[in-house]
Amino acid sequence: MGHEHPAEHGHAALQHHFENMEQQREASTLGMWVFLVTEIMFFGGMFLAYTLYRSKYPEAFASASNHLDLKLGAINTVVLILSSFTMAMAVYSTQIGKRRNQIISLALTLLLGATFLGIKAVEYHQKYEDHLIPGRVVPSRPFDASGVHLLPGANPHNVEMFYWIYFAMTGMHAVHMIIGIGIISIILFWAIRGKYGPEYHNPVEVSGLYWHFVDIVWIFLFPLLYLLGRHLEH
Amino acid sequence: MSEHIVPVRVYLMIFLALMVGTALTIWAGLQDFPGPLNVVIALTIAVIKATLVVLYFMHVRYSSRLIWVIFASALFWMGILFALTFSDYWTRGWFQVH
Image 1 (cartoon, each protein chain N blue to C red):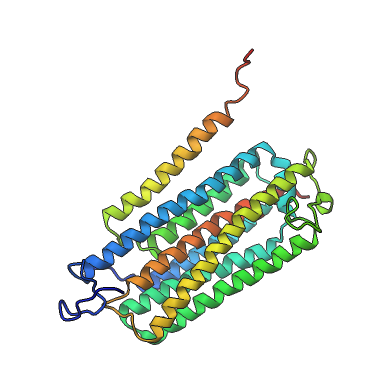
Image 2: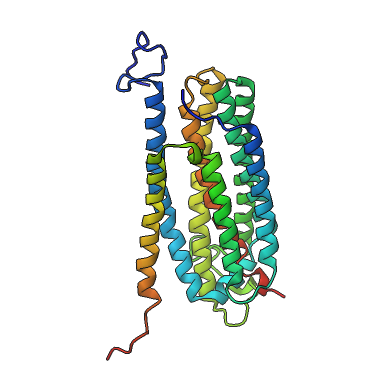
Protein backbone atom coordinates (compact mmCIF):
# COMPACT_ATOMS: atom_id res chain seq x y z
CA MET A 1 0.00 0.00 0.00
CA GLY A 2 2.29 2.70 -1.37
CA HIS A 3 1.73 6.37 -0.84
CA GLU A 4 -0.68 7.28 1.87
CA HIS A 5 -1.84 10.49 3.38
CA PRO A 6 -3.01 9.31 6.77
CA ALA A 7 -3.49 12.87 7.91
CA GLU A 8 -6.08 13.59 5.20
CA HIS A 9 -9.61 12.23 4.92
CA GLY A 10 -9.24 9.95 7.92
CA HIS A 11 -8.59 6.41 6.81
CA ALA A 12 -4.99 5.17 6.58
CA ALA A 13 -5.78 2.81 3.70
CA LEU A 14 -6.94 5.64 1.40
CA GLN A 15 -4.41 6.02 -1.42
CA HIS A 16 -3.50 9.49 -2.58
CA HIS A 17 -4.96 9.21 -6.08
CA PHE A 18 -8.49 8.64 -4.76
CA GLU A 19 -10.85 11.27 -3.44
CA ASN A 20 -12.34 9.08 -0.73
CA MET A 21 -12.83 5.49 0.40
CA GLU A 22 -16.03 5.10 -1.59
CA GLN A 23 -14.29 6.00 -4.85
CA GLN A 24 -11.37 3.73 -4.01
CA ARG A 25 -13.73 0.82 -3.31
CA GLU A 26 -15.65 1.32 -6.56
CA ALA A 27 -12.43 1.57 -8.57
CA SER A 28 -11.03 -1.67 -7.18
CA THR A 29 -14.32 -3.52 -7.73
CA LEU A 30 -14.45 -2.23 -11.29
CA GLY A 31 -10.83 -3.28 -11.89
CA MET A 32 -11.56 -6.78 -10.62
CA TRP A 33 -14.57 -7.09 -12.92
CA VAL A 34 -12.50 -6.06 -15.94
CA PHE A 35 -9.99 -8.75 -14.99
CA LEU A 36 -12.82 -11.28 -14.62
CA VAL A 37 -13.99 -10.45 -18.15
CA THR A 38 -10.57 -11.52 -19.43
CA GLU A 39 -10.90 -14.66 -17.33
CA ILE A 40 -14.31 -15.42 -18.83
CA MET A 41 -12.76 -15.11 -22.29
CA PHE A 42 -9.86 -17.33 -21.25
CA PHE A 43 -12.08 -20.15 -20.01
CA GLY A 44 -14.49 -19.41 -22.88
CA GLY A 45 -11.89 -20.61 -25.37
CA MET A 46 -11.65 -23.94 -23.60
CA PHE A 47 -15.43 -24.28 -23.36
CA LEU A 48 -15.52 -23.63 -27.10
CA ALA A 49 -12.99 -26.43 -27.77
CA TYR A 50 -15.04 -28.73 -25.55
CA THR A 51 -18.31 -27.93 -27.34
CA LEU A 52 -16.72 -28.41 -30.75
CA TYR A 53 -15.17 -31.82 -30.05
CA ARG A 54 -18.13 -33.04 -28.06
CA SER A 55 -20.46 -32.28 -30.98
CA LYS A 56 -18.05 -34.05 -33.34
CA TYR A 57 -17.47 -37.18 -31.21
CA PRO A 58 -20.51 -37.54 -28.93
CA GLU A 59 -20.15 -41.31 -28.30
CA ALA A 60 -16.45 -41.15 -27.41
CA PHE A 61 -17.03 -38.16 -25.13
CA ALA A 62 -19.93 -39.89 -23.38
CA SER A 63 -17.84 -43.06 -22.88
CA ALA A 64 -14.87 -41.12 -21.50
CA SER A 65 -17.07 -39.01 -19.24
CA ASN A 66 -18.75 -42.10 -17.76
CA HIS A 67 -15.36 -43.25 -16.55
CA LEU A 68 -14.96 -40.15 -14.33
CA ASP A 69 -15.83 -40.52 -10.65
CA LEU A 70 -19.30 -38.93 -10.39
CA LYS A 71 -19.38 -39.22 -6.60
CA LEU A 72 -16.11 -37.32 -6.12
CA GLY A 73 -17.16 -34.72 -8.71
CA ALA A 74 -20.47 -34.18 -6.91
CA ILE A 75 -18.80 -33.91 -3.49
CA ASN A 76 -16.38 -31.35 -4.91
CA THR A 77 -19.29 -29.33 -6.32
CA VAL A 78 -20.88 -29.18 -2.86
CA VAL A 79 -17.51 -28.33 -1.25
CA LEU A 80 -16.90 -25.47 -3.68
CA ILE A 81 -20.41 -23.98 -3.38
CA LEU A 82 -20.07 -24.18 0.40
CA SER A 83 -16.74 -22.33 0.13
CA SER A 84 -18.43 -19.63 -1.93
CA PHE A 85 -20.99 -19.28 0.84
CA THR A 86 -18.31 -18.98 3.54
CA MET A 87 -16.50 -16.42 1.34
CA ALA A 88 -19.71 -14.41 1.04
CA MET A 89 -20.01 -14.60 4.84
CA ALA A 90 -16.42 -13.37 5.18
CA VAL A 91 -17.28 -10.27 3.13
CA TYR A 92 -20.48 -9.78 5.10
CA SER A 93 -18.73 -10.13 8.48
CA THR A 94 -16.14 -7.58 7.36
CA GLN A 95 -18.84 -5.15 6.23
CA ILE A 96 -20.62 -5.27 9.59
CA GLY A 97 -17.36 -5.35 11.55
CA LYS A 98 -17.59 -8.81 13.14
CA ARG A 99 -13.90 -9.69 13.20
CA ARG A 100 -14.23 -13.13 14.81
CA ASN A 101 -16.72 -14.30 12.17
CA GLN A 102 -14.61 -12.71 9.47
CA ILE A 103 -11.54 -14.73 10.46
CA ILE A 104 -13.53 -17.97 10.93
CA SER A 105 -15.21 -17.55 7.52
CA LEU A 106 -11.91 -16.90 5.75
CA ALA A 107 -10.29 -19.90 7.46
CA LEU A 108 -13.24 -22.12 6.49
CA THR A 109 -13.00 -20.92 2.88
CA LEU A 110 -9.33 -21.88 2.84
CA LEU A 111 -10.07 -25.27 4.38
CA LEU A 112 -12.82 -26.01 1.83
CA GLY A 113 -10.58 -24.86 -1.04
CA ALA A 114 -7.85 -27.22 0.15
CA THR A 115 -10.41 -30.04 0.48
CA PHE A 116 -11.46 -29.48 -3.13
CA LEU A 117 -7.84 -29.72 -4.30
CA GLY A 118 -7.25 -32.83 -2.20
CA ILE A 119 -10.24 -34.59 -3.77
CA LYS A 120 -9.07 -33.42 -7.20
CA ALA A 121 -5.65 -34.96 -6.50
CA VAL A 122 -7.30 -38.29 -5.61
CA GLU A 123 -9.18 -38.16 -8.93
CA TYR A 124 -6.03 -37.33 -10.91
CA HIS A 125 -4.27 -40.24 -9.23
CA GLN A 126 -7.10 -42.59 -10.27
CA LYS A 127 -6.67 -41.42 -13.87
CA TYR A 128 -2.94 -42.04 -13.59
CA GLU A 129 -3.59 -45.56 -12.29
CA ASP A 130 -6.03 -46.19 -15.14
CA HIS A 131 -3.56 -45.05 -17.85
CA LEU A 132 -5.80 -42.11 -18.74
CA ILE A 133 -3.26 -39.28 -18.65
CA PRO A 134 -3.39 -38.30 -22.35
CA GLY A 135 -0.54 -38.63 -24.81
CA ARG A 136 2.86 -39.34 -23.33
CA VAL A 137 2.69 -36.73 -20.59
CA VAL A 138 3.71 -39.57 -18.25
CA PRO A 139 6.33 -41.33 -20.42
CA SER A 140 6.16 -44.60 -18.48
CA ARG A 141 2.38 -44.70 -18.84
CA PRO A 142 1.23 -43.77 -22.34
CA PHE A 143 -2.49 -43.22 -22.76
CA ASP A 144 -4.47 -46.44 -23.03
CA ALA A 145 -8.27 -46.35 -23.37
CA SER A 146 -8.72 -50.12 -23.01
CA GLY A 147 -10.03 -49.67 -19.45
CA VAL A 148 -12.82 -47.36 -20.62
CA HIS A 149 -16.15 -48.97 -21.47
CA LEU A 150 -16.81 -47.78 -25.03
CA LEU A 151 -20.38 -47.02 -26.09
CA PRO A 152 -21.33 -48.06 -29.64
CA GLY A 153 -19.63 -45.81 -32.21
CA ALA A 154 -16.92 -44.54 -29.85
CA ASN A 155 -13.35 -44.31 -31.11
CA PRO A 156 -10.60 -44.67 -28.45
CA HIS A 157 -8.59 -41.83 -30.06
CA ASN A 158 -11.43 -39.46 -29.38
CA VAL A 159 -11.64 -40.76 -25.79
CA GLU A 160 -8.09 -39.42 -25.51
CA MET A 161 -9.29 -36.05 -26.85
CA PHE A 162 -11.83 -35.91 -24.03
CA TYR A 163 -9.07 -36.48 -21.49
CA TRP A 164 -6.91 -33.73 -23.03
CA ILE A 165 -9.80 -31.35 -22.57
CA TYR A 166 -10.64 -32.73 -19.13
CA PHE A 167 -7.10 -32.19 -17.86
CA ALA A 168 -6.73 -28.79 -19.54
CA MET A 169 -9.97 -27.47 -18.07
CA THR A 170 -9.84 -29.00 -14.59
CA GLY A 171 -6.09 -28.29 -14.49
CA MET A 172 -6.54 -24.59 -15.27
CA HIS A 173 -9.40 -24.51 -12.79
CA ALA A 174 -7.15 -26.09 -10.15
CA VAL A 175 -4.42 -23.51 -10.88
CA HIS A 176 -7.02 -20.80 -10.25
CA MET A 177 -7.98 -22.51 -6.99
CA ILE A 178 -4.33 -22.55 -5.88
CA ILE A 179 -3.98 -18.85 -6.70
CA GLY A 180 -7.25 -18.18 -4.86
CA ILE A 181 -5.98 -20.03 -1.79
CA GLY A 182 -2.81 -17.91 -1.94
CA ILE A 183 -4.83 -14.69 -2.13
CA ILE A 184 -7.18 -15.65 0.70
CA SER A 185 -4.21 -16.71 2.86
CA ILE A 186 -2.80 -13.20 2.51
CA ILE A 187 -6.24 -11.69 3.24
CA LEU A 188 -6.54 -13.90 6.33
CA PHE A 189 -3.06 -12.84 7.46
CA TRP A 190 -4.06 -9.17 7.35
CA ALA A 191 -7.54 -9.86 8.71
CA ILE A 192 -6.02 -11.41 11.84
CA ARG A 193 -4.01 -8.20 12.23
CA GLY A 194 -7.26 -6.25 12.11
CA LYS A 195 -6.68 -4.46 8.81
CA TYR A 196 -10.19 -4.85 7.40
CA GLY A 197 -13.46 -3.56 8.75
CA PRO A 198 -16.63 -1.67 7.73
CA GLU A 199 -14.58 1.34 6.56
CA TYR A 200 -12.07 -0.64 4.55
CA HIS A 201 -12.99 -4.01 3.11
CA ASN A 202 -12.45 -3.89 -0.64
CA PRO A 203 -9.50 -6.35 -0.61
CA VAL A 204 -11.79 -8.93 1.01
CA GLU A 205 -14.56 -8.09 -1.44
CA VAL A 206 -12.51 -8.33 -4.66
CA SER A 207 -10.84 -11.55 -3.46
CA GLY A 208 -14.36 -12.85 -2.96
CA LEU A 209 -15.27 -11.88 -6.54
CA TYR A 210 -12.34 -13.92 -7.81
CA TRP A 211 -13.26 -16.88 -5.60
CA HIS A 212 -16.90 -16.85 -6.75
CA PHE A 213 -15.77 -16.69 -10.37
CA VAL A 214 -13.72 -19.86 -9.91
CA ASP A 215 -16.82 -21.44 -8.34
CA ILE A 216 -18.90 -20.49 -11.40
CA VAL A 217 -16.40 -22.15 -13.75
CA TRP A 218 -16.84 -25.36 -11.77
CA ILE A 219 -20.65 -25.02 -11.84
CA PHE A 220 -20.34 -25.41 -15.64
CA LEU A 221 -17.49 -27.94 -15.63
CA PHE A 222 -19.27 -30.41 -13.36
CA PRO A 223 -22.29 -31.24 -15.57
CA LEU A 224 -20.33 -30.83 -18.81
CA LEU A 225 -17.51 -33.17 -17.83
CA TYR A 226 -19.07 -35.63 -15.36
CA LEU A 227 -22.67 -35.97 -16.46
CA LEU A 228 -22.71 -35.84 -20.23
CA GLY A 229 -23.11 -39.56 -20.94
CA ARG A 230 -24.57 -41.11 -17.80
CA HIS A 231 -28.05 -41.42 -19.29
CA LEU A 232 -26.66 -43.66 -22.08
CA GLU A 233 -25.15 -46.12 -19.63
CA HIS A 234 -27.75 -48.83 -19.04
CA MET B 1 -20.57 4.23 2.52
CA SER B 2 -23.57 3.94 0.28
CA GLU B 3 -23.02 0.28 -0.45
CA HIS B 4 -25.71 -2.32 0.01
CA ILE B 5 -25.14 -4.98 2.66
CA VAL B 6 -26.86 -8.21 1.67
CA PRO B 7 -28.53 -9.84 4.70
CA VAL B 8 -27.41 -13.32 5.85
CA ARG B 9 -30.89 -14.70 5.12
CA VAL B 10 -30.39 -13.96 1.39
CA TYR B 11 -26.97 -15.64 1.35
CA LEU B 12 -28.45 -18.72 3.03
CA MET B 13 -31.33 -18.89 0.57
CA ILE B 14 -28.95 -18.64 -2.39
CA PHE B 15 -26.75 -21.34 -0.88
CA LEU B 16 -29.77 -23.65 -0.49
CA ALA B 17 -30.92 -22.90 -4.04
CA LEU B 18 -27.43 -23.82 -5.33
CA MET B 19 -27.55 -27.10 -3.40
CA VAL B 20 -31.00 -27.92 -4.82
CA GLY B 21 -29.67 -27.04 -8.29
CA THR B 22 -26.73 -29.41 -7.84
CA ALA B 23 -29.03 -32.25 -6.75
CA LEU B 24 -31.34 -31.55 -9.70
CA THR B 25 -28.40 -31.57 -12.15
CA ILE B 26 -27.25 -34.98 -10.92
CA TRP B 27 -30.78 -36.41 -11.00
CA ALA B 28 -31.44 -35.05 -14.51
CA GLY B 29 -28.06 -36.32 -15.72
CA LEU B 30 -29.07 -39.89 -14.84
CA GLN B 31 -32.42 -39.75 -16.69
CA ASP B 32 -32.60 -40.56 -20.38
CA PHE B 33 -34.51 -37.61 -21.83
CA PRO B 34 -35.41 -37.59 -25.53
CA GLY B 35 -33.14 -35.88 -28.07
CA PRO B 36 -30.78 -33.16 -26.87
CA LEU B 37 -32.89 -32.48 -23.78
CA ASN B 38 -30.22 -33.79 -21.37
CA VAL B 39 -27.76 -31.08 -22.44
CA VAL B 40 -30.44 -28.40 -22.47
CA ILE B 41 -31.54 -29.23 -18.90
CA ALA B 42 -27.95 -29.46 -17.61
CA LEU B 43 -27.00 -26.09 -19.12
CA THR B 44 -30.23 -24.39 -18.01
CA ILE B 45 -29.61 -25.40 -14.39
CA ALA B 46 -25.93 -24.35 -14.64
CA VAL B 47 -26.89 -20.93 -16.06
CA ILE B 48 -29.45 -20.40 -13.28
CA LYS B 49 -26.88 -21.37 -10.62
CA ALA B 50 -24.23 -19.08 -12.16
CA THR B 51 -26.73 -16.22 -12.35
CA LEU B 52 -27.56 -16.60 -8.64
CA VAL B 53 -23.84 -16.51 -7.76
CA VAL B 54 -23.23 -13.43 -9.94
CA LEU B 55 -26.28 -11.50 -8.73
CA TYR B 56 -26.08 -12.24 -4.99
CA PHE B 57 -22.68 -13.65 -3.94
CA MET B 58 -20.92 -11.24 -6.31
CA HIS B 59 -23.36 -8.41 -5.51
CA VAL B 60 -23.99 -7.49 -9.15
CA ARG B 61 -27.68 -7.03 -8.40
CA TYR B 62 -26.71 -4.14 -6.10
CA SER B 63 -23.82 -2.84 -8.23
CA SER B 64 -23.59 0.15 -10.53
CA ARG B 65 -24.69 0.13 -14.17
CA LEU B 66 -21.02 0.19 -15.18
CA ILE B 67 -20.45 -3.25 -13.62
CA TRP B 68 -23.50 -4.56 -15.46
CA VAL B 69 -22.15 -3.26 -18.77
CA ILE B 70 -18.72 -4.78 -18.18
CA PHE B 71 -20.20 -8.15 -17.27
CA ALA B 72 -22.56 -8.04 -20.27
CA SER B 73 -19.60 -7.28 -22.55
CA ALA B 74 -17.98 -10.57 -21.47
CA LEU B 75 -21.12 -12.48 -22.47
CA PHE B 76 -21.36 -10.52 -25.72
CA TRP B 77 -17.80 -11.38 -26.77
CA MET B 78 -18.32 -15.00 -25.73
CA GLY B 79 -21.33 -14.98 -28.03
CA ILE B 80 -19.17 -13.74 -30.91
CA LEU B 81 -16.53 -16.38 -30.17
CA PHE B 82 -19.09 -19.19 -30.32
CA ALA B 83 -21.23 -17.80 -33.15
CA LEU B 84 -18.36 -17.19 -35.57
CA THR B 85 -16.62 -20.48 -34.82
CA PHE B 86 -19.78 -22.52 -35.23
CA SER B 87 -20.85 -20.66 -38.34
CA ASP B 88 -17.75 -22.30 -39.78
CA TYR B 89 -17.86 -25.81 -38.24
CA TRP B 90 -21.61 -26.40 -38.51
CA THR B 91 -21.79 -25.34 -42.14
CA ARG B 92 -18.92 -27.47 -43.38
CA GLY B 93 -20.06 -29.91 -46.03
CA TRP B 94 -23.27 -28.01 -46.82
CA PHE B 95 -22.06 -27.43 -50.35
CA GLN B 96 -19.97 -29.57 -52.67
CA VAL B 97 -16.93 -27.63 -53.81
CA HIS B 98 -15.15 -28.99 -56.87
